[in-house]
Amino acid sequence: MSLRFATATHIGAICIFLAGLGAMTVPAPTKDTLPAVQFVGHNSKITTPRVVLAEDQPTWTLLWCEHVGLDASVTPPTRHLVPKIDFTRYVVVGVFGGEMTNTDGEVAEGVVISDDAVRIRYVSSTFQTSSFGGNADPGVKTAPFGLWVIEKIKKPIVIEQGTRGLKDSPLSWKEVKRFEAK
Image 1 (cartoon, rainbow, N blue to C red):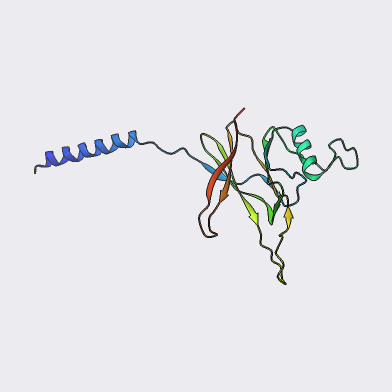
Image 2 (cartoon, rainbow, N blue to C red):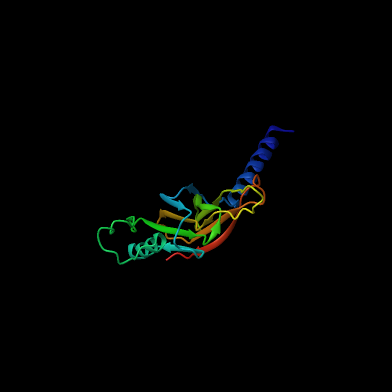
């Protein structure tokens, strides 16, 4: 084989390879982070399941007051009970599980920001109880919640709940709510 033929063959192969690279689709870059602030617990006064988005202080104030069981029209000395949020930079997303048993809260596992959406992925934090003496275990009544302060981005916000079949199985993500971009 001549040197000229070998060089032409290698150059041809390189050109085909480079042309193939140009046709490949590169996945959108993602940023995986956590909420700026996360409130989680088991004793919300909101006892019906719902997923919410607060984009301004008045909406947030009403939601917080309902969550903690306060009258939104309270006057001093309780006027500072509602956490202040900079809604020019952030929004608040909340998941309320409703009346349940043995659930300690809805915990954000991550906020995934991609080209097409902001995905908040959460799991329910559960615990086990038991009873002795032959009585059935009724569990502990709870009203779990998760409130997450996330960066305001003009993209849809998708809320996904993580579940697993067995405790060692990997999480599967299921969309539970989508808020379209405004």
